Image 1 (spheres, rainbow, N blue to C red):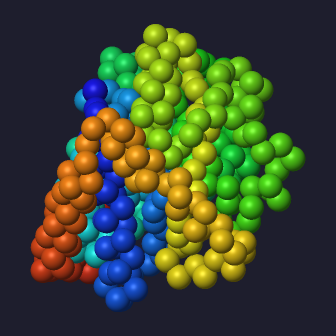
Image 2: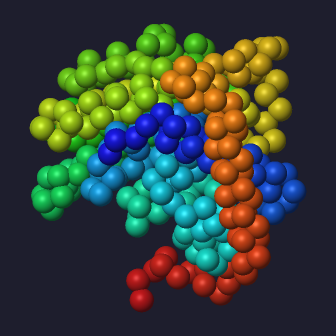
Image 3: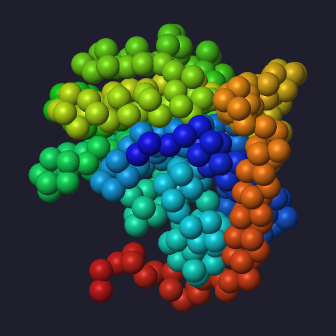
Amino acid sequence: MTESLLDHYRVMWRIRLFEEKTRDLKVRGDVSGSVHLCIGQEAIAAGALGGLNRSVDVVFSTYRGHGYAIASGSDLTALFAEILGRGAGLNGGRGGSAYLSDPDNNFFGENSIVGAGAPHAVGAALAGLFDGSNRVALSAFGDGAMNQGAVHEAMNMAGAFGLPVIFLLENNRYSELTPITAMVGDVELYQRADSYGFEGIQIDGNDPTVVLDAVRSARDRAARGGGPTLIEAMTERLVGHYVGDVQQYRPAGEIDDAKTREPLVISAQKLLVQGFDDVELKSVETQERDRVASAASAALQLPFADPATALEFVYDS
């Protein structure tokens, strides 16, 4: 699917404003459970979905996955409703912020177990070789997940069988609250792909067009039988690991510095060079702000999920 930078800019504003509103709802007490926001990392989800065949390819994300749901096309009201525990939510209010999914849009969801989406994606890719779908599976996860055994096993299997998987590593430089530099001996994580027998690349994860090009190339290679790819997308989150994280572990001035090269700033600068003006760009923000506000307001009016249905879909009848 071909998308312009303006399309990406719109989606990134949608994600940013959705996340900011979700944070407000959490702080206000309307959201139960932990909430992990992707503020500052919007370009990866926006660009990645543009590089896939949305009619067949499937996406698995980390628990910081609202952006992938939005970029996949999830209805904003249903998404807010899910996070708010409403019965009309994407998953009947059962998933909440960290476990939601939208299979109707080929987004097979978040997972609160670090790195657990990688073996799921490998399974989906393997199944696609037998069911005739020829799908490519994308697994998005953070730098901390690279040290999980399940991710190692998933990459090893994908490499050994040449499976059509894209491993999309969102390196925001922190494994939860610990700098990646304190976690590994070699911070060039994309180079690990060599040991599994497939290609690894490192890209600017704050530029959606760069992400799109990388994912599209990996997708084309996988669809031709060329096997998996590890894409290390370098980015920075502009908020805490979770809502309420005071971020005492981050050096003074780090976040302010990151704001000078975050996705919305980079894309706005490029759009201005392309001939768009400030009024047009502000209009995009205003339209998306109204869209998000309307969706949140509608979701807040919906009834809560019925506790009596909590065990539905848990056991076979």
